[in-house]
Amino acid sequence: MKVSTRSKWALACSLYYAVNYSKEVIPLKTVSKALGISEKYLEQLSIPLKKADILASTRGTQGGYKLKYHPEKITVYQVLSSIEPIHFGEDASDQAGEKELLSVTSEFWDELSQDLIKQLNQITLDDLRNKYYQKSSQGLMYYI
Image 1 (cartoon, rainbow, N blue to C red):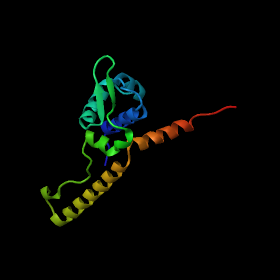
Image 2: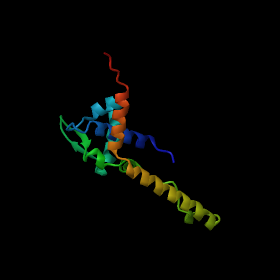
Image 3: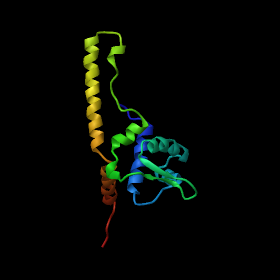
């Protein structure tokens, strides 16, 4: 499975909101500068995230986005599946060829997809946020 660029940025964007969860709302301009991607692209990513009930928005000059729920309540699967379907296999019934052989491979891909979905549902934005905190604290040097 290849993860699309849109999915990668949607997860990065969601993680940014998780790291800054204590703030009220964050303007797209701020997120754009922090992640190094265009504001317009972020806006396109924010629409499906909002539809999936992951982001909440506020309009106006002080407007922006924030996570709708605490980061421990939002899974990586929710974020990624809001952008594109997560599935490895195809329906073998539509394909020409030996039906039993195609059925077995189709079942394999379906099982693999289900295992991946299960794993992605076990990882929350809070888990990723904690990894971010660990990495950012490792870079600190203390001098006496």
